[in-house]
Image (cartoon, rainbow, N blue to C red):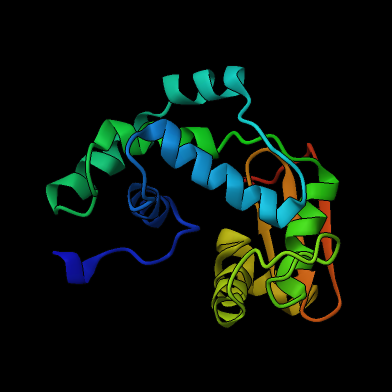
Length: 183
């Protein structure tokens, strides 16, 4: 039921639901909205890595299974295949360490990109986003990370890590050495 909707956009279930809610007339239009959001955060145009997208889409069986489960409870808005395509595309947006640092710095700066001065996210949403990153961004190790490092951070399978210190800075790094939980 909709009142049981997964609300955490960092975890796969919530990310699929959130992705299905992105407005637009088709997948291309919806992807443009996501890329525009990334532009506001990073201060530059970003694109999807077509080869990585194709590979991820081809082996996205777990995500398809989760999407089917969510569809069963009417939690996916619109077409499940379109939601999956969009999910796989935004999961393969090409970013570098500077982009990651700019995303963190934008969140640390109350939602305003510190270089462009553009409002990337409403200031009243920054605390919610930072809280989700703080509690879930390092997945199973989030609590340990906060105890040892103390900065809200988000990691992903690519080896990317984005961290922030509110009102101070953003940090972005890549590390090819991932632990058994993908951090």
